[in-house]
Length: 227
Image 1 (cartoon, one colour):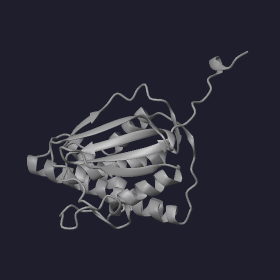
Image 2: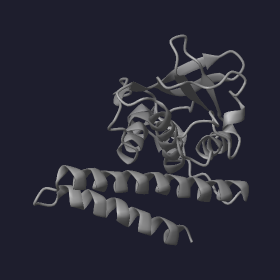
Image 3: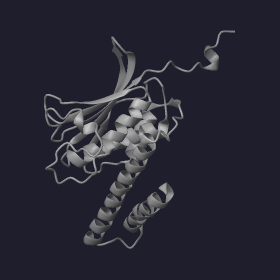
C-alpha cells in the first residue's frame, strides 16, 4: 500500500522536473505551471508519508535501526528532500559535531517535517536557520540539540504543546494547507529515541523548534584501542 500511494506522486515530481529541464524551454506560464505541479506533488507526498508513518508508529510497527549518524549529513539529506527555494536557508557549521546514534531515515523525516513546517508558515524571502550542538542538562545529562528557526507568525500563546497533537495546526484560521500530522510524527519519532521536542518563541518573533536527543557515547576507533 505504501508503494502504491507514493509511486504516482514521485512520478509526478519527476515529470515536472523533467519538463523544466528538457529543451526547448517552456514559456513563463508553462514553467510556472510545471513548478506548481511539482510543488503540490511534493507536498502531497509529505502528507502521505506522514499518514503512513503515524499509522505505523501507533501500531508499534516501526523498529528503530540505530546507527551512527552525522548530524551534518542528516541535515543535508533533509534539505535535499525538502528544499525551500523561496526562503534563505542558513546552516550553521555542523562539521565538528559528535556522531549521534539514531535511526537515520526517521530522524531525516523529523528534520524534513520541521523544514516543511517552516516553509509553509514563514513568509517568502525570510531566513530559515538550522543549528545544532551538545547541551548539558542538569537533570538529563548531555543532549544533542538540533534547532530549526523560522521568522513566521510563531505559535499562539498556550498552544506550545497542542501543536504536537494529531490533526492540530497552529493557526486554524490560516489558509495554509496541511492535515496537522507533521509535528505529531516528529514527536512520536523523537520520543521513540528517548528524546523530546518543543517549540520556543524568540524575542524577535517566529518560532524555533528544538529536537533534543540523549547524547551518544562516541564509537571507539581502532586506533584508539590500547594495545
